[in-house]
Image (cartoon, rainbow, N blue to C red; front, side, top):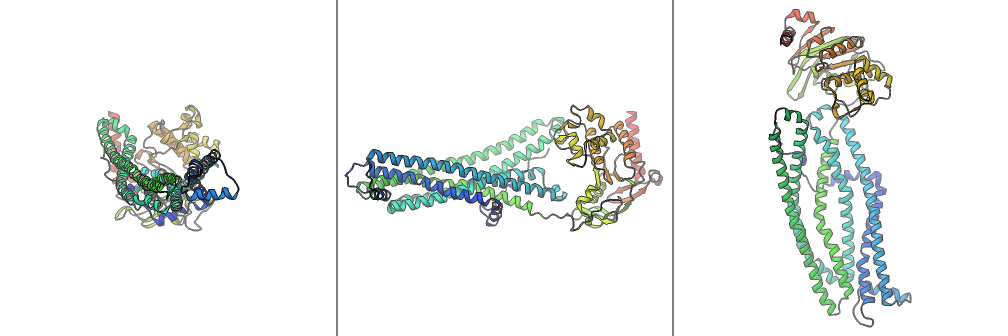
Length: 623
């Protein structure tokens, strides 16, 4: 049981803003630019409506609440309203004036609420459409990437790209950029109104901005470090859980529950400590913001109150300043949180685009070879191949399989047997030499046509969540129920399927949980036969089936493989004795080939393998 990884490179945070990445992200908005423009218009309208309330308060105080006839200064907004009333020949009573301004205030609040709701719906809908498009693009790309990419990238990391990283971008579109745009419009509107009301008091209002900016900068730097630390610790928890939940049978078998719990407890405690550190910065920052905001409001009250007493400022203007100041300071304080959203989105987008931009090495050539019928001839011509540079797995391998012929491949673990199947299906490309089907290099074939001509049954069978029938058909509309039933009957899977509660409609859980290894392999045999491939590859396909089931399958295969080209990769030599030819591989080379009897007569590697297995069988029989 391995210790948890000390660092997860996918959690490294890059620049908080990258213009190149942002331009690319905005490209996903282009199909929905109508919704985006509508949301921007609604944001501006919301900001304008939110500016009305304090002005209505100032008008009510200056024109209708102060004693009539009292000669005091009124705000610019109140003076403007007084001019409009005089031009219209209106002289409302204080009660009517207060009622009218209150109605304006309430109406602006109600409209702002409605517009904000509509804007939120529009942005959330646009965000969901964008996330749908992005997830489809990622999944489509994953299906195009070569198998080598999945060898180098853990499944959990790839799932994170489609889930967590896409969600981070969703938050950017629906909460980050929109909120920042709304804050900028609001701040610009408040600055304009404050200078319109009284430029001197506006400067007093802005006097605390350097202090607020310094506090925000401190918090941003500290929060960035703590945010990264929390993400790394969370990634360790996810990685540990994924590994140990998958390996739970091994934990319980070897009584390692206590040790695993101790390891998890340590990782979990590190995550708690990281969150506590983050909480500390938030606990300091927001009260400090409140303190600085209160200081700003005190300055406004001190200076503005003196101006009111001196008759240089109206009481309504002072009250409006206090209300606007509160609305002005809050968006500035919230910018640090928007910074975290922006930073997470930039990091996520960089990881997503790195995957999307990964070149696809194995693709169908233009006008690729795609014949209607495939004869099934296979040729390996001096093939050399390595999974890792400088570590060759195959060395100059050459052999031929004629149409309809059954060729078995045997050898010790790591001899390169399964690699032959991977190269034939063009999951990987050879380093040198050529793999040919019907005389045409597989690199010149259309990939879809090549792989549709080959059926493969692996030792480690993968079943999808769904039904037994669905796992045989795999969504192919050309395979009807009758053919599914025929395939199951031919490989002797029909009896156990009919015993299942719902027959072919029986639900299959994740990875075929609830089915025995033998039953899953029978389903995979039926799957391969249902597609009627011209070439059939069996990669240790009967290694986990009991002897009785294996005998049934062997009798079925003896009939079904007749006329098909088959490549049988086997560990049990008893399963391939009737093959037309047997290839013996050793350290990436074909060392021997011939029939079963010919290879025994040579008394080479095959003979020694046979003797070892024969002794093992005798010992098991004697035991």
